[in-house]
View 1: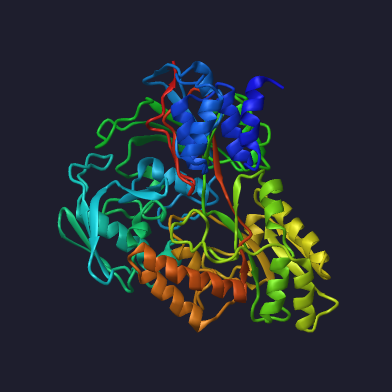
View 2: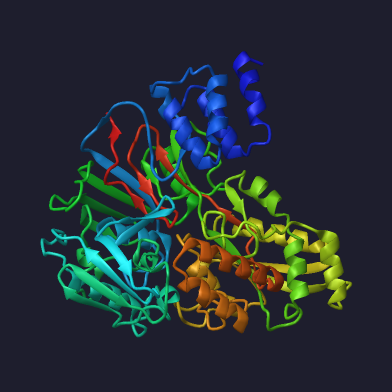
Length: 568
C-alpha cells in the first residue's frame, strides 16, 4: 500500500460508492482541487472533510491537467480539461420515440428530448432549482391562485416570426385543454384548463388556476415536457417543420432512425457552439452503449447501472450523474383481497431489503425510498419521518394478524425496461420469506400499457403492478396522479378523503416550512396505508465522451448539446 493510499484510506471508511469514487479520482490526480470540492459537495461530503482530504493528498492536484478529464461524474453538465474547438458536429444518441413526436401527446423519453432540441420552456428545472428561460420572472397573488409571468422580449421562432405572450398563452391552453388528449393532463387537471392563460399585453401572461398551487412555475417548466412554447397558430404535424425558439433548426428527420440539425443563427441566446447536431435513435440500451463505445455517438441520453457496466468506470467517458426523483411504483389494489387490508400491504413493504437494492442493483447510485413520493432530493421532504427498513418477523406477524398466517398467492405485472425485471424478481424472492407466492409476468411497453395514454390500460387493473415514473422537480404529480381518489394513474385504486385533503393543502402551500410540515403528515399517512411501495429513487446517468465540455442534462431526460465543445 502506497503512502497516499494510507493517507486517504481512513476517509474512505463508511463512505458510499459515489463518495469513494470522487476521493479516488482526486487521489489519482484526475480531479483538480476546484472540481474535487464541487463534486464532493454535490455528493454530500462536508467542506471540513474535503479540506482534510486535500491536506491528506498534500495539495498535489491544485492545477488542471489533461488527465483530470479522463473519468468521473458531474452534476448537471460535462466538464473537462484540455483544449476544445468551436464548430464541428456533435453526435447524440437518443431512445427511439415510441410514437410520433407530438408536443401535446408525447410521454416518452425519446420524444421529449426531440421536442426540447428546437422547442423551449418558460423556465428550466435543473440542479434542484428553476432557471428563467422564455419567462424572465413570475409572481403570485396571496393565495397562489393567480400567477403573472413576464415574457422575454426579442425572441423569434426559428422561421423568424416574433414570439409574444399570445403564443405562450395559446401553447399552455392547448396543452391543458381536457378535450385534446394531452399527455400533460395528469399534471394539469384541476390546476389548468384550456382557458386559464391570458395575454393582456405582448410581454405578460396571467394564469388563473382552478386551484391554489404554491409551486406552479414547475407546471410550465421543463418538468412538464409538453409545455414547450409554439406559435399560437400551430395546428399539428410537428416533425414537418419543427417549430420552436431553440438553438437548433431541423434539417432532416427519419422517424425511428435519425435526425439532423444545424445552428439557428437567429437564436435569441448563446449561439450553438457546434455547427451541426446528428441524432441517432435506438430502442435497445445495449445497442446504444455499443454505439458509444464504437465512436458512432459522442453523448448518450441515459444509461442504467445494469446496462452500463462496460462504461461506468471507463476513463474514456465522463458520466453526468444527477440525483433524481425518478423511481418505480409497486402498486397493490387496495380494493381487492388480500390487499384491501393495509397490514398485508405493509407486510410486503417490510419484506423488501431497500439498502440491498441501492447497494447491489444500483451500486450506490440511488437513494432509499420510504413508501411515499417524497424523495431525498426534494427540500420539502420531512426528514423526521422514520425510514422503513426490512423486518421479516414483523411482516409475518402482520400477515398473521390479518388472518393469513400461511401467506397467500398473487400476481405481479411488471414493465420490461432497464432494471425493472431484476427489481421485480427481488420483490418475488423477498415475498417468499414471508410466505407470499408472487407469480411474475414481465411485459413489453405495448402489452403493458395496452391502449393509448388515457385508454383502458390493463396494468391499472392488475392486482400488483410495477411501473416507471420519471423525475419531477416537485412531488406534486406523484402525489396526485397515482394516489388521489380520482387520480389519472391510480393503479392502487386508493381512495382516501383524508389523504386527498392533505394533498390539496400541501400543493397550495407557498413557503418551504409549511410544505415540510404538511409533507410529514402525508409521508406518515402513506406509511400507514402503503398503497404503493417506493423502494428507491435512482440517479440519472448520461455518458459523454471524455474531452467534451458543456453538455447539459436534466433528470427528466433532456439533453442539451448546443454549448458542447468538442476536443481540439
